[in-house]
Image 1 (cartoon, rainbow, N blue to C red):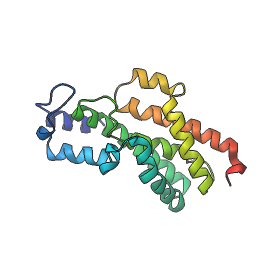
Image 2 (image 1 turned 90 degrees about the vertical axis):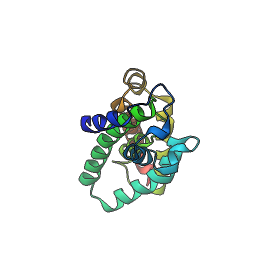
Image 3 (image 1 turned 45 degrees about the vertical axis):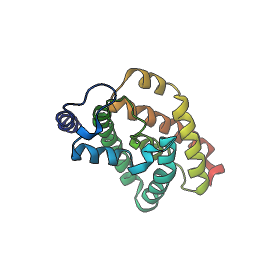
Amino acid sequence: MQKLSEDTSSEQAGLAGDSPDLSQITPRARFLLLVGSIGPLGHAPASGTVAVAVAGIPLCWLMRTYLTLPVYVAVTIVFSIASMALHHAGDRILGEADSRKLVWDELAGFFVAMAIVPLTWKSMVVGFFLERFIDIVKVPPANIIDNKMHNGVGVVLDDLVAGVYTAAILWLLGSWLV
């Protein structure tokens, strides 16, 4: 994670204030922002919800269908760590804290939410709405993380907390979701 932030800090030289001159962003930094926003999804209204609906649900379905649980968990962990690095670097490039344009955190939270429940259309739909609600409301300790940690780790951790809460609720609903 440190390597990524060091690489991008030199690339954003000349960017000042909250509104960076986007013409000064290097091609590498532009690519990072493109990946972090999942193309146009990060620029949509309610970008996090749109990103999970358009990219997160299908990707989660594919991963849960074709990966074993241990591999799914490993991929989710690696994705979450990569999300922290991406959000840290992307926010620095954009001169924003928890930029709405970067949406990997939302996907990481959804992947955690869906890790231990039976994979059905009902669990995906309920999981989607429940995780988005819990993430938006910022149930403790997510609200504390959101208020105190203004870096890539904090940006992603509050979504992971929402994912854990959602997973627990979905697990309790168990047989209703099958």
